[in-house]
Length: 147
Image (tube, rainbow, N blue to C red):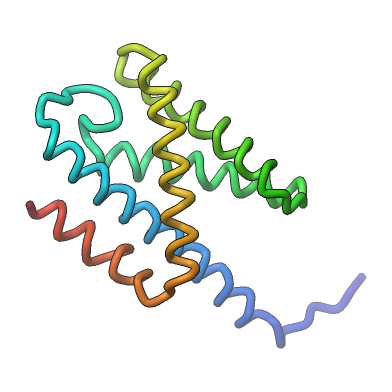
């Protein structure tokens, strides 16, 4: 049996915390953008724009975590494979949303692809500009909920 080394636990916690913060920040930025789009199109009563906060934090965030887990298990760092996994995850999130809302799967599934790719772009933006992580993880979503 290998001995447990305790000198690396703080690094693991910091890495996990930054990952969680980047996911929450990506969800906040995606929610903000979908919220602004739903304000511009107030007649959207179904689909991803019906309740952007609920849809992003329950469907997109969950499926994004599953996609990241699958990418971590496979160990491939190819951008093409990452794109394929996120497209399939977005399609799955759209199907899941369509099933729960009981409306057409085609629009929700293809919009789910766009939402999950936007989610990934928001996560990459947060990784490149770490000062924005707490802003989009906490303050902007709360401000959008108040409006």
